[in-house]
Image (cartoon, rainbow, N blue to C red):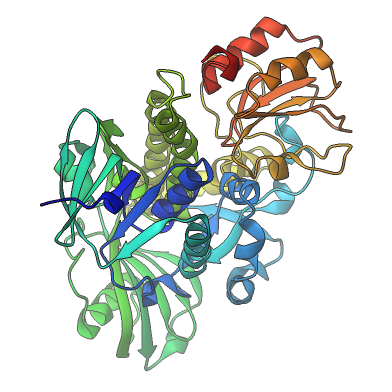
Length: 510
């Protein structure tokens, strides 16, 4: 099949969900051309809207959106979400901070001062919905010049040393790279031959909107029973898990089936008059054996799937996109260090594995057994302590995420604090152009001279700040991760080596 010249793009992304769209924005920000292929004709589905589309965004995700000037746009979509969340649980006193297998921790118990790598101030996730996220990302992608082809399903690809040819929707498209962001049943992953391994499901989960004959028979909130777990929000929003080994996943739930499972799990003689919408899910926890093979990369659910308990799947995928975007773009431009793209997998695969284990641990507490109930009672006692609440908040909110970059400095490998600088700017604002930063809190000319050699990739910022967390010099990657930091007089050679390690050779050396 002949390929028209206009069909060539630096990167072809399969999947226009939040991860694919966010990755497309990152790539375009870095100056490479992007084509997104999406199977669905239209982006809107009932499951993306409230209440089933409700999602919590972790601290790293919120910081990433702020660094790309997307946070305010998203908040403008969130009035409906805030109303729903307030009505359901945020009105509780004390204020919940999140949960682990339904066991809540509370904000007034969390000691954020224990996180010495973060600036003082409020910390926490925010709530939004999938429809809002996709709308904001799609609008930004289109503004940046990303081409999105909907109703164009990925079929197959052919790879050469220099490019990939992607067949989708009866057409052929050529690019340098193909990225699969097409979900847990990823056709790209399967076509690439990358393995997908993990643990099989223990339950079928249900999300349903129903009309009940006797809604007062169900107590609102989350409940563990001898047969499973269910949550209920009046008048008819239900989530429940039935420990059947995932037998009913991907089936089409009927009214009779939802009623039977609800009766079993709740132990209540409840009648479902009408089923408005329902979806199923499981606790299957699988991860790709590799995040890259040749010119094919994976991100989001294509690389890892797990139960939605705790709402960390979306955040994990957006973290993949933020990590991959600038690295792939630098590789395409030709200014990346030779192994930069390899660090995508070496950094993100361990984070994915941690989240899968976090999900498995929650399932262990949810099993309808005496041992799980006993373990749950112990976890409740731990969560009720200051140390316990702080630990669970650190994990659930994502504030403890750190890449192993081979440097023992407290800040290296972590998300850069949003330093408030003496010129009125903030770190996050300075990252909005997609370049790295060299923050010099003493304004030394020698450091600016070094940074100027990478002026196309690193912005020098020589201003002071009231709170620097004990650092004098900080090198920040385009994704907001601290690549190098020091206290006191920095070694110019160390700064140069750190810049070369993450940004390649300086312009004057190429």
